Length: 301
Length: 184
Image (cartoon, rainbow over all chains, first blue to last red; front, side):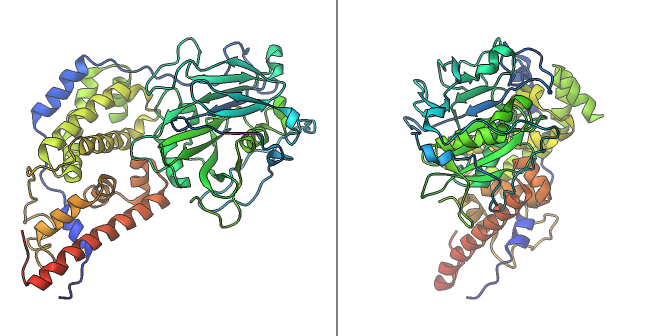
């Protein structure tokens, strides 16, 4: 038998609109539930440290790095001192993830003085809650450690992040704060975190989640990255929010968990100049967890 | 008009939300019924989606995207229902033959039951994208907006869903040819 299957035509007929009518009782039941269901407040992640004064863009730094999610018991080991050498520059990235355009610094800025290739430039940190080990610049300090894992819908109370490890830069006392947020969330159900597109889509599903919506990629194109020296586990970097702050993320396909890094200030934020900007700072931090730019033609495995 | 209603609902106006819910109910039901292939599950999914939508509505950033956002909420509710009841019941209301596409649009190619069987074997995310495309008539950009994926990803997912459906239909057709008839 030799049948030609015109599947689009078949599905067009099979799924064609008809007189669907939702019984009133369904709407009524929903409205009954709604009558006793409070709405969640439209909280936005205050990706600012609570003690940071109202900074003007010209004077303040707040680089925020959010690291989300490791698989259960997963640990990121750092200390690959050479991996962040010089701060990764703009490299070609594979489709479909063109490198985000970061506005160049308009005003003359100091040359970067932070050397990410120097092992002494980094302090390792292991999270008691999440189990990962990361590294932060050695002149930074721990602002607050996570006390419990992130839960969907958990509100931000009093500008505190008990579900995150938060680090701050030394300039914090002067008001030029850089914060590093580290936390863990599960990937949305059905998310495919093994691919760049899937990872971006997974982040997109979190856009309305109040505690991590600052990591929302919006419509900004992500840059493809790889976790791992030989194999490539999907990771991405994208500019988020109105300020176009860089954020990066990777997923663990086995555990369905996503790891994100978010810097809450734009690349040209003045106080980030000694890192070469917040993008370079984030990339240096990523390099410490073995996240790199992919080789030409390299795709996640 | 709807934007005003959405904004009122975002501020906690249940009456405004009720108007929105009633005006979208049939479409939501149509989507859910086609994805889930089960009337009861579809009703549950719609009810659940409306409650979730109400709860989360203040977080919707752009009221003009309400419909896409609501449909995304529904699709996720459908996924949840599908997970909750993986063993599909026999409660399938077969679509009428005299649909808009013509009285014998399916029959001359494949049996409707074969399409039903094939469609139900697809994973729920593939069923969802096929429903958004063939039932709602959404283009790739609109599908991407609903599923929150780039249009290019929507294109590839739709392609794979079509390919999977075709493979299932072809697989169903093979034993038919050998047996000289179809099994029900």
